[in-house]
Amino acid sequence: MATVTATATTKRVDVDSGHLEEVLETLKLDQARGDGAAGCGCAKGRERDTLLICLADTCQAAVRAGALGLTIRSSMSLLLVLVKIGRIAPDTRLKVLRHALFGDRSMRFGAMLASFVAVYKFVLGTAPVLRRVLAREYLRVTAVLGHVSSRTSSRGRSAAVYSNLELWLLPAIAGALAGAVAITCQRRSERTGISQELLARGMQGVWNTISTRYSVRVPHGDVLVYALSLGQLMYSFNMHPETVTPPSLLPWLDGACQVPARGLKMNRDLIQRGAFDLADAQALMRRKDITPANWDTLSRRISETMGATPLLPADCVVPCAALHPAADTCVGNAPAQFWRVFKWMLPGYLVAHVGPLVALRHRVLLGNPVRETLSALLGAVRTSTMQGVYVLIYIALFCGKNNLYRYLARVRASGGPGDTLLKRAVTSMPRGVPEALVSEQSFWVLGFVASVAFWIEAARRREMFNLYIFPRALGSAWIVARGWGWVPQTGRHGDTIVRRSDLLLARVGVLECSCGLGFSRWPGWR
Image (cartoon, rainbow, N blue to C red):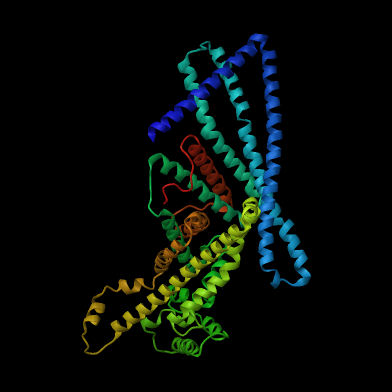
């Protein structure tokens, strides 16, 4: 592998060496045709023509990118509206459809792509002119110093400098500038999510370079990345919801888990403060779907909290009645929990599977409509099943660890002369072991373990899930670390900094892979 890379690099430098020599010879001929001013005028004329051609090509590419972005965003918005058209008031349907097609979100997305392509392509397109200007200045300086040399070694060293400039520095600068300009087209509230997405892409490009060059392989790395990301995200969602980024993700997580928000708040308050707000329990008791047994449980917990008797450790965890008020038992809640999540997820994933097929692969769809449509429908069902199984495992572990803690606390607190083997084992257990079951960090473990459901998803679609969930987890981890004082504050310019850095990473990673190293989807994460 190293031999192949070295050979590819040598060939690239040789080509650039020859090209640089041609540039130098052309400049010498320009100077030899007449005085220096005439030769400089001819060179500047050619550079001006090159800039005009580059500007025209940049404008065409920007228009194409903007039209493509507008079409894709409008198509996806239209499909989402059509899915829920029955729940929209008839007198506002036309307005909603018009906003889906030509709303500010679609326009901003198209403008973002157009500005990015324009800046990036213009900067890279002017690189030959920059190379020519640098070569002319090189001749001028060496002529003044009086030691112009035509030795091949000197030209080779100069060619290597220009090669590194073009292959690394210029794309990095172009990506950073284009990203800084493009991010300003989006609303400030949406810049964080876009920056996170591109940060994941940039890290993907760097990982592609490292894994391909050094033959690094991580078995089942896609599942591992998903598990680590979900562990962090579930920890933040349950214990520190203010750290979830972007904030628009919180309503989606609330709907996806299908657990009452008041119940999650009771759990968070009991872990962090050792008490819960009575208004949360009373709101759960007013639910129409609550069972009589769960109503009695919550009523008893309110009476115990308001009483003068101190609560036992076993009563300092959220009751299961607050997590699934419509089911008396945790086992009986499982089928209903899965069906609620599956039914809630299916419309969105139908759009996610069918939308790209209609908007981007319409030729494939027209070639075999039955097979492609059936494949998209089955993919949506499979993804919804994966999400339902994940929530099912997570809630089962949630209730299981709370019930286990209550059992261990009661055994430890039970008095009397009984000296069974179980009681001796529980009492000799370090106090931190049962306390870990109801700690904040336990929710990170729950999110990590429940990610075994990711095996249900098709392997070819796991990359897209990781590219979505991984940057959200990174953003949440950054905010948590910032709250602990581990990382510095970035102020309001953090999105722009991340945008520039991730586009620089993406450009460098893609360039490195395209220069003879190959490019694939997360190579090494198999």
